[in-house]
Length: 284
Image 1: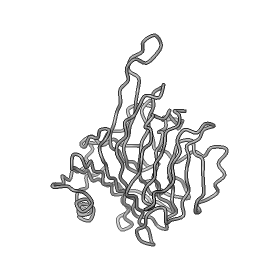
Image 2: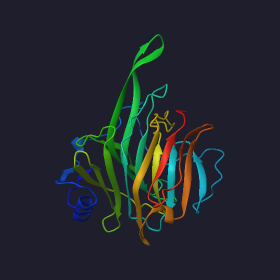
Image 3: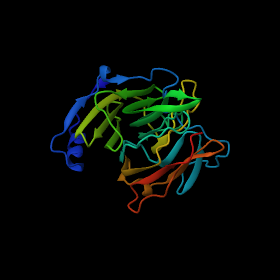
Image 4: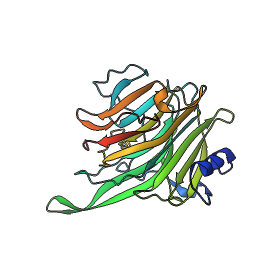
């Protein structure tokens, strides 16, 4: 990923929307991005694998869908160019097995119909590091920011801006038709610092997303979901050919994570239409 730190519109918006007294703009260089190390790590924020019982055939107001690895909302957007959101980094609890989760905003769907999936967010994992009498006696949690351009490239970890449970974060994903690039802005408001980056991509089409996900192995099989309790997306917006709107006012699909069991489900839109909760139900 090439360094990018020259988008004044993003930086001014960051300054307007937070109480920052100083905003450090950090370029994301190759040294500050790492790919997942093995198939045991979250490999990809893949396009959703539909459960057999999915009945949704397309985006429409108040539609519902079941996916194996996503819980949240997908909204219809004509020529989408930007998705924004904020949330508090949740604390991941060990769910009885190694568990993984991430929260993100994105454009496109990562398939032929919906084009490139451009996404960015936070990772929150909980892995067993010590067994006693066949039971986990110690586990380790891992938290970080990341970006991805699926299927072009898998998740890349940002290493020069840390996050911890309880940190308020803000994420913006923007696509520019002028230079065919995705631009990412990720901010830790507790630290009053942001990273900005860009990557050449193909066009995202038709949709934007706000999702809690259980990542997948390198072979595409979803991992167990870490227990993050109830998490809430806030300050959501989508920009497309019709302007900038809150997602509730757009045709949207409510997605529950289901693989024969309900793993996580989103709640209703907030009164303002720019946020919603997602609740953990079980790991797998």
